Image 1: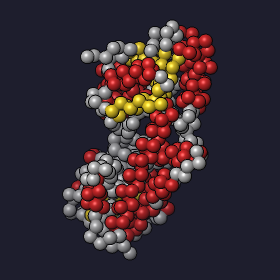
Image 2 (image 1 turned 90 degrees about the vertical axis):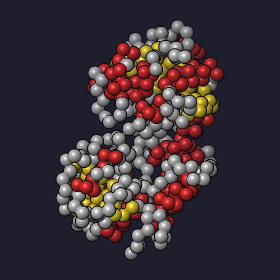
Image 3 (image 1 turned 180 degrees about the vertical axis):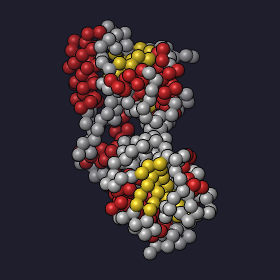
Image 4 (image 1 turned 45 degrees about the vertical axis):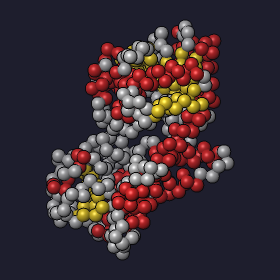
Length: 435
């Protein structure tokens, strides 16, 4: 049965908000997307997406009749049923998330609702926040701004579990829909809207708001723990004669208690979610007097991966050699370099005296301590590289070895080039002689 069409608002039309607008509109809802960036709104209104997110521009264009993009809140909330807040919550030095943008957004939403609300309205916090925030200062700011209609303004917490480059897919085919609710009616409405987007049958977990807030950062902290565990196994296998981390991890993941997801040898984790959510989970644990030993160890193992890769390079090619870094983003199909393992490595490699060029299919510029030449896979020409190091397992890089001289050493951190035999090939996590 087709979902009941609803009038909705999304506040924040960035890399997560714009896909949410598109997915809601694609489900048949009428959606107003609000963002303070005039340039962003003008681009989205024209169907132009200025970052790499497969399928987003097409989905916006396809559902243009259901979407209004605007840079202010005026008139956006008349006859609407729910608003989704998906604005940045930047990390601060302590490891906590700042709610300043969320507080500004809910205050403006509350003010508009005070003038237009006729029945009830649900405000959904999608941005990742610290446990206690939604029913604490966020709800207080919302209700203060709503004034006399505050009792009719309800609140829920429902974060997304997505990765840049696959946001549309993640929203339409989620493993789980997480709903943090204060009351059943609000949760029912949110569940109806959320499930209208999806094309599979995900688990719907309806928790208290505090439980959902803990769940969000705990899931990402657990995933980072699996990644660091995998890299520790990889470190062990490199120092064990005849041992391959890939084979060991494949066997470990075959145990149903563990599973194979995120269990592979590769670089450390990076990006805008994993590192900061793990730190936030540690900070929240510590605030309750709970030692966060596992989170600390996870972070420690992740941080040392940069130096581990430098040691691997030094064992293969001497400082002063020219090397090629393949992939600059933190993962495939995105131009985001936040906490990218490749970027961290480049700085260390330059300090160690290596000459560095790079290949990336989305990142065009990168500020480093030395000028860095960045090629696309199509523009790269064979050159006198002593080594090429694969940091991002994107299919667009699979033919890079064919472009390079056969004397170039291949250092593959993910196993993308395993079928390339005309080069000196090293797979991260396989045994090599430790000097």
